[in-house]
Length: 256
View 1: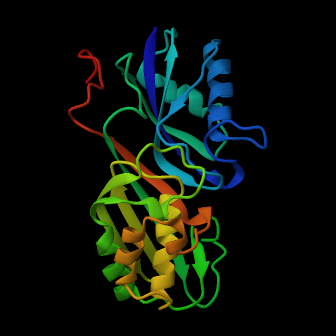
View 2 (view 1 turned 120 degrees about the vertical axis):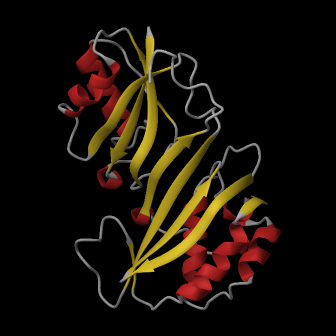
View 3 (view 1 turned 180 degrees about the horizontal axis):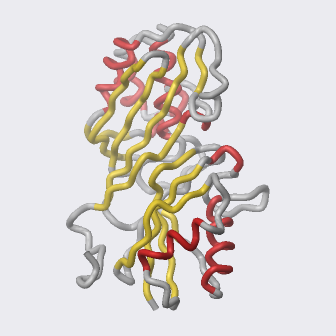
């Protein structure tokens, strides 16, 4: 028995998130089904991030156990032949048998994209949130700086979270603009339920001058979800990558 790691990219538009549920098709469900067919085994993947309905990914991590003789690095090619076009395995390799993507030290990077112009662009409608009101980029950049470092992010967590602690560390928190596209980029050691989308929704309110930039610090200190802005729609959110801490045992010695 060996444990295989997959780097999974997907367009979340048609899926009810990552985790298997009764009300619709999920990414996890599709991966399990096609892996079972490919390997002839009962396979259940473990995902690093349980992205919500409509959220996209360029680099989610999943692992599963198998007795297959297919070389680990070849599984991605065989699996991609079976998967729908909106789910693509970017890489497959063997990892240590006890490696668990949700229990290890890691850095996750999310991007939230805002299409900010007078009219919608049909080619961007599935991967960015349309805001027609001109947004003040400088105000948003000033506000997001307050989020860097270790804080209690209770104000940016939706009800229903099962997190034991609401303290998280953001290593990077930035807002950049290229043409009509504004990108909120957050890198942290972990994220609370809907945390990125609530931060994005709050920053949009700052960009509209509903809140002054200084209000972001007051929201953090309040530790109250009611103090923050609305949750931005899932359509603009993409999990960009997950980086495993170098101190974490990850690969077998014979695997480069």
